[in-house]
Length: 407
Image 1 (cartoon, rainbow, N blue to C red):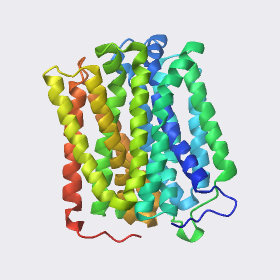
Image 2: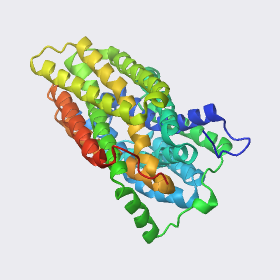
Image 3: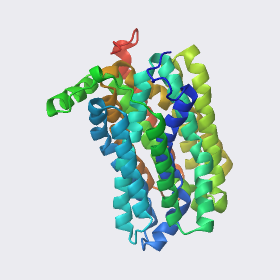
Image 4: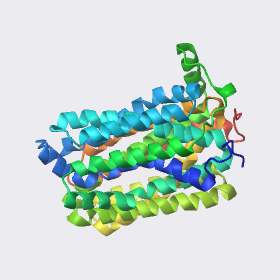
């Protein structure tokens, strides 16, 4: 493993922590909101409970679309400055949401907040591709996602706590403060990792050429689409989890505890993958984990249809899926980025755009289909995981005996 970080910059542990913090601002922007969705909707005069969910997909759509801009910017101007600009937009949008007085304005600010956060996700992945290759890249991404996935352990509980000591606006105050701390960390500790000779022109021709490189790579595109569909399954859970646990199962104040426990299992999956990937390889681990994910989704669907899905069984199945999910996503992400080092920023933006926009759209559909039971969620898990498996199988079949050239 080699690193291009300048002397005096962050070591490997600090680097992983910083990368995780950059990605975790997005997890906080979603998970900390969940306990407050109903209160926010009531305070801003939005009576439709399903429409209150829109503060989540609005953020994700902004997050996805602007990645198409920040990727080429990061390939032209380096990683550091575009990252700082994006974090500034995130902080300002969250701070503005503190003062909002109507629901539609809040949805618009959430889109802007997600747009700023797009820089952190794109550039975090590009930084990993700058510094690591192969299974080492998958290992590093696993550790980053492990820390990131730990946020659901305490984010909903923190959101619930904040709501007990201050109005719902305090949630946005926390987001703004956390984003500002990450921006300060980046400013003080993160040097530039993109060498001047590797910078690409920021012109229409160069941008189109960069995206063409990404979309012409069949293996990378298959894994990118696989992550997008599976992220849609996760978004379906995020948008309807509060209704399932609180409305269907009557868990009330225990909802954050169930959510946190699922986050703990997901974080464990990330750690286990980081230990196993160097021995078994990212392809074998991720493909088998996807089969497990699909099988558990099918089990949930069958039990839901025959009404034999009590809350403890639902939670155990979800825990198994969360565990498998981290084996899939970090490895799929590394497999998609592996052959695209020459256009890492553009590749990361393409992956992030398709993942977030398609994922947010599919998650919204699953959330809007909520019928008072977990059945629509389970059906979404099955359809999306099977489709993702088919895309990966057919997209990588020509290359099963070897790897595409790493650039």
